[in-house]
Image (cartoon, rainbow, N blue to C red; front, side, top):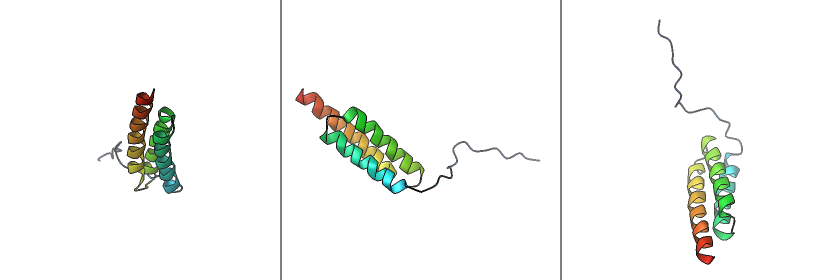
Length: 83
């Protein structure tokens, strides 16, 4: 008798509801990280929204998280150079 072992790296079954709006919010927060002086707040929030959208199954979730991370770096750089 073999016992089935649960794979901790198996994909989870998540509801795809609201996945696309979460990705859009992640992109908008990434853009806000570049434009406003709130890169330290908007960047991580955008990454979190993008990653949640990715886990829920949105194909734009991971690009939204990456865009928010790049936006945070650019926004912090602009803030650093303007001070």
